[in-house]
Image 1 (tube, one colour):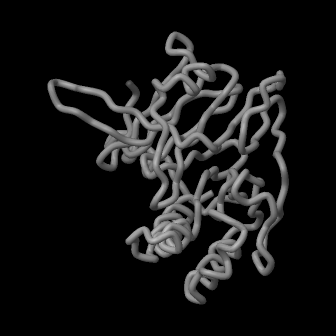
Image 2 (cartoon, helix red, strand yellow):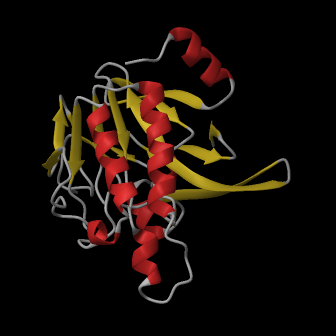
Image 3 (cartoon, one colour):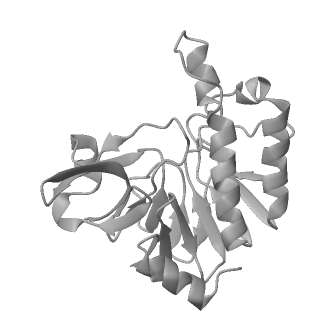
Length: 234
């Protein structure tokens, strides 16, 4: 842990970070799209989707192969700020099983350096990446349990513990004083906490779509929206 009271106070005042409570833990929600648990010194990030750009290019989409580079640079800056004991990558870290074969040598080396920066790196399996690519350090797992809370990629509807998940890439549109805003978001109720997607080319599912409303009905949910470098509750 590298953060100080002065650093946190400044970031909260600038609305770069907000503080919330979930499953009896205090969480720092960072406007850059990650969550941090001070009590454990854990940094949580979800849905990196590394090499999504090169995957889409193979289907004639005119996208540059820069998404992995940009995603890793943003993540490195965050890791340098928090210097956590553990990083949890909450599934769909790699866009498909061939991602590593398309990744540049520079990006592969950068990824390995990031993993080596922290004592523990946990790769939670996702629907895009059920198997950790060869040559990538860190620990693959299906889920991580902390007291009465479980971290996994997709929700288990019969689960009685509080769940922290990714997968849905939640986003939100809203109007404030006649101005329209749109951005990724964190959203939760007492039983389910959904992380935003971190990857450079990740789209999103509006939290007012039926599938999200089934998971998190409006009367029960909190929403923390990310827009223009700040985070605010709506």
